[in-house]
Image (cartoon, rainbow, N blue to C red; front, side, top):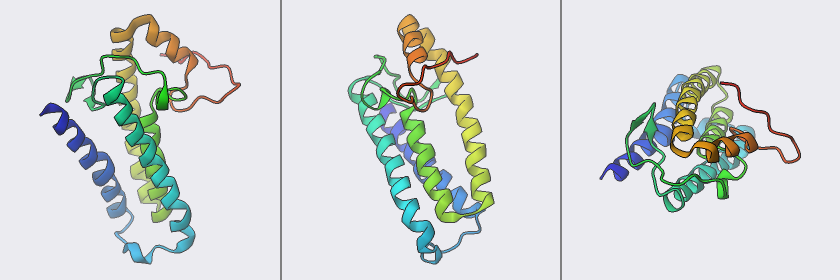
Length: 169
């Protein structure tokens, strides 16, 4: 039941709730009124973000044997039991969040509003706090294996051929 709750909360908050807040902050324009020059790039960007996030969640469930929804150190659903370093986690320590940010970028492009952008910025700042909390937990759970992965893989994306720097605490 905890897993179902975790997935439901994640969907309700990140896929529906935050975009709805962005839409409201932007003045709630009708979707039909969004011009094609914004919709045409926004849809594939948002869909790519959703794809990356869903792929990461499925991979986390299958390989990590856990659930992504861990809120500031409080287990909402069972945590992962295995460190994931392949699949969507090969180039990003946080592909689910990277996909979510990409999804929100598509929404900001469609809405074209400084208020929607402000909501995105606030959410990104809050999620960064979550990432920092999660990194401490992963270090505690997986030790040197996670530290090696952290050193080799970017927080949001690893650029091939670039030497990764050690993240500062």
